[in-house]
Image (cartoon, rainbow, N blue to C red; front, top):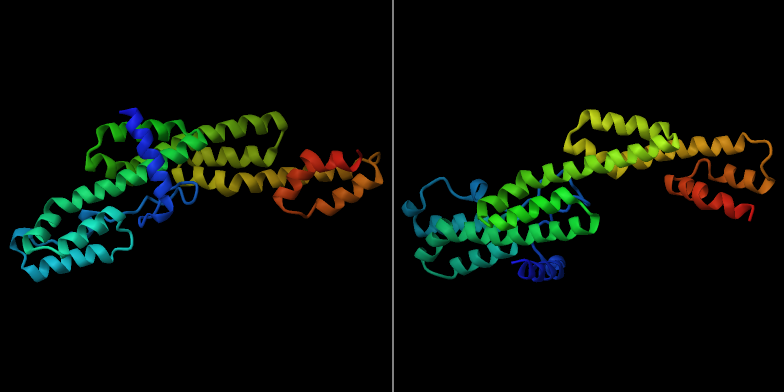
Length: 251
């Protein structure tokens, strides 16, 4: 089973730019639930067997109009529209669910690819359990809730690692913000810290470190000038100065 999965993973990754569905990548927007069209939100309330041909066509066109409908759903919906009334009825009965599962499976392989790159163990674990189950319901449940919770588990581990390093370095702003985030504990707060909060808190600590350099009367004129130039810089400029630039000045 694993060799086949690996092959599908490569294929899904290669198809990624062409996919019509929205990629549920937390790296881009982890707090947003992955979105692909769902039968529960798009399917008509009237029983399919009681619908006229026109009503069947309208129901399928509504599915196609959903911008989150994936490639599998789009393909099967169009084939149903090109067929008979019974073809359309069969699509709404079962084809939609199976096509949605196909799109969900592609989305989950993309998540697995990203998680492998990032070393997100909880996401990798939950993805593999979902793929082993394989049912349309399990695939959808993972995308709607499981992914968010698994990513939060990995994010929490990452923040504890950051906190450990910040404690060793005496980075007060990072320690403060990391603890506040862990106290909140929500997946959204954890992700926001990793995406923006950590960078800003580290910049606050880095700026303090540069001020300390400037307060040292024994530094060279060149180092003083470089520190004065970077003190109001971006978080990236401050970090580069402390890690590399300060040593290049007096080299």
